[in-house]
Length: 340
Ligand SMILES: Nc1ncnc2c1ncn2[C@@H]1O[C@H](COP(=O)(O)OP(=O)(O)OP(=O)(O)O)[C@@H](O)[C@H]1O
Ligand SMILES: [Mg+2]
Image 1 (tube, rainbow, N blue to C red):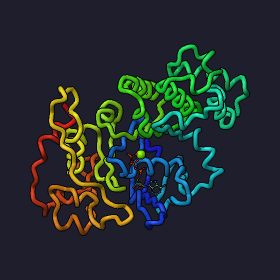
Image 2 (image 1 turned 60 degrees about the vertical axis):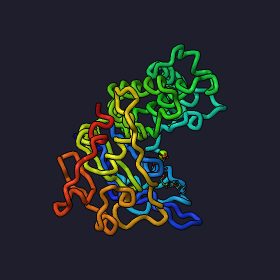
Image 3 (image 1 turned 30 degrees about the horizontal axis):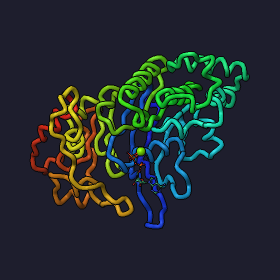
Image 4 (image 1 turned 120 degrees about the horizontal axis):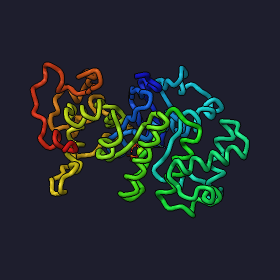
């Protein structure tokens, strides 16, 4: 499959009073046409910073892209100026956030907000843009679209607002949609509807999606591939099946063991990973998970492991995969975790 986005060795830091916070430390990943790639990992692992970097939405100062490339359509987005980036943002690459209220302007009608991008990026006339706005509202499942375009965000429920945000994001037929915890703020039934809607729209438009989520259940239902982030790095990546059924990184085992099992009665014991993530103002020189890893070895503390290619699609950075390492049994909870 054709790659439409490629991150190469991305490093992003924030300069704070406490020193440099190395939020993203050498992330490489690619996104293929039409697929959904999920990025999972605990709070603070660098998921949002990675995705905001793609959109060049990291505030500078205090943030800066220190190193690396963000290749899109033959261009390195890391090197574009703000004017060039404005032509891409919202048109070729769109982003939606957790809280739809922060992405909508409370003082402007829904219609105007959808039309804005169409007028700027697609040089539509007002009438054309209004017609397209109504069409988009229908597409995202908002009833009575002709009347709804004239209303303001506060007249919409949370779920309906997120539908509007999706309509705005998809207005210009972007090649990539970045969705950062798009359903976290919504209640469970609405979450499912929004995810269904995103899948349905993806089938129609072929937009590739980067889906950031804490919820491995969402990953299983919505994504084809997963990247597991920890301490600003990707520790494991693979297809959903590989990461759920054949995880090789102890952090992935921990994540799977700490989530409710799909279809379970809710009586399974959930095992949280003890300890806390590394301090990124003084990042560990070895594996970021070493301090919490039940299988930690001396080498893990001193050297970051290289990726081991386990298949054409699965890559894992863990010293346990080195031939000199002892064989370790995968914990039962991790293997069935989330999968059954
Ligand atoms: N403006 C900022 N100034 C300083 N540090 C920042 C800033 N924004 C993010 N960071 C740091 O970057 C790291 C990664 O943050 P990020 O928001 O990407 O985490 P995340 O994986 O999205 O977490 P969550 O699941 O909570 O959304 C964190 O250590 C965070 O404190
Ligand atoms: Mg985040």
